[in-house]
Length: 269
Image (cartoon, rainbow, N blue to C red; front, side):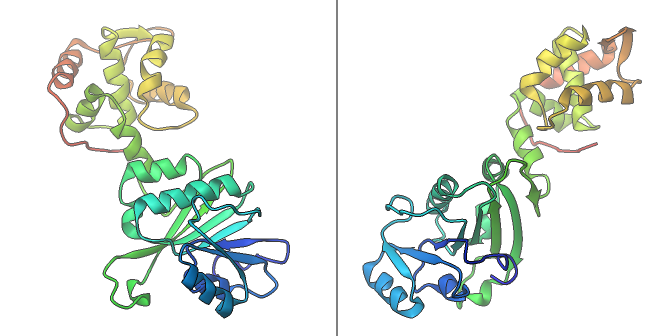
């Protein structure tokens, strides 16, 4: 609470979902409005007594809550479907710049696709915390912040977005990335030209690549042009805005693209 939520004050409202006895509620200053949600009526009664806060009985994913929180903080059950359900409800409830802070098992962030899915809606920050804060726990732990904001960022996550984007590419593109060397964008532009018969102008190259971008950069057309200029030895300029591959490279790419998908190799320029 002191590390990430010192800014909370009387104008805020904090919800602790799956609050149990109310550990996070107890850590809040008295002047910060807060309530808990607990599915077990008996534990909810204990939390009311120990924290002095209002406790709603029910499943946070579906129970009626007549309030708009500015922060949702807690330690949800370590089940991915529950974590995802809590985050869905939190996103629906929070205003712009509202934050979720959860203690989570590290496996919640193990795959690129899962993190990329979260990053479609949230800015994410994560840091490791010791697992032995809970006696007998064998799982690596982290503390994650999810911030609902328009400009989304990933802090503490390397290559998650890039890996997820590459994994979504068609088989031919992933095969070329797995079996050739050089920057990702260079290889994608080469294959796009190969698919266009070895020679094309910029609009045709854009059209081929648009649904097969290896990264989600907003300025991907600029990235295509930069790649064509940067690797002038690989791309032959036929006319202004028109490029070609040499016949040897064309044959190599055609062979690779038809062999089936193998292990991906992600090398960013």
